[in-house]
Length: 466
Image (cartoon, rainbow, N blue to C red):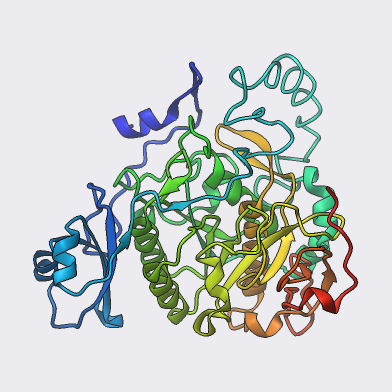
């Protein structure tokens, strides 16, 4: 086991070291489908240029005094990152800010609901007074019985590890009729590859190891290596692991490609997200999950989403958690004509068919999905309740994985609006007032249950519950 992997498994949490189990000895090699070296130096600018098949990567880097992070001569473009702004102006290049421009949506500093980590990043006092002590996770709560040898059948998931759904989300899965969805979707997402572009995942988690893409495809853009491990010790630690756990509850046989672009604090560079999207597209994924966003318009990310669309990839992106009539980018681009059939901005709704108070809305919101206290996994074989559009988004990704698992040629856009339930909100502006149902309720014609936008004055609105 290499030093880096050992370091990633000895994780300090407020003075307490957790040694995670199941650490393997896999030697991960660089992906074979790229000639680009990982960016070991962060640059403050990122930009797009046009290239042709006659251009050479080395010549372009020299001319622009920058490093190529995406090279798609076949599609006529490249993405570069550099620091010499004046030089780029002389080259007539419009660059945008790069470092820590991307982040995962948070809820007023809270990542997880129900006090799982207290009232801050990890609460006052490691995990709060008794949160993981002799009661909450001690003998009883998660001991013999609660999650023991009978709670979930012959494994953590019913019917065996990674082949069913968490009973702690029983109300949520009943709400979206996931059980009937699983009965209809006999393949349960088998053969569908989903790129989770996030904080990485717990690569050794017992519920994930059998659902991962080949190691040769993994990339960690944060540490510039090929072990996208979800590291603890930060505000957004466990975020990517939780997202992945939700996807696999909905589509238990889907394959996950982990790509790490966000650090444990939940921030990352636009150039890394661009590179990850390109790598995912070139690795044959069917779906990209982006539980992250950026406040400002990014021509670089728009270009990458257009490239993903050209490959027939469906992208699901979180709308954000500020409760504002402004959808985060890149979800906001779902209203752009070129992306309307391939990119979907996902908001959050409650079990009461109401828009979650924190969920952003407006142009770019495609539909809602449940996003309040969704039970999912956490690094180190732990469990946690998660709230936010970050966690409504993977439900949508899982639903489409079920659809594509039954019919590879299904036209997802044509299936939008088949079976929905109204969501109510008193907010002003363009609202999508439908919740995505089903996991999906697969009709004989292999449909799914995604909603289309309507204006708020077209329904009987009622206030969102405080």
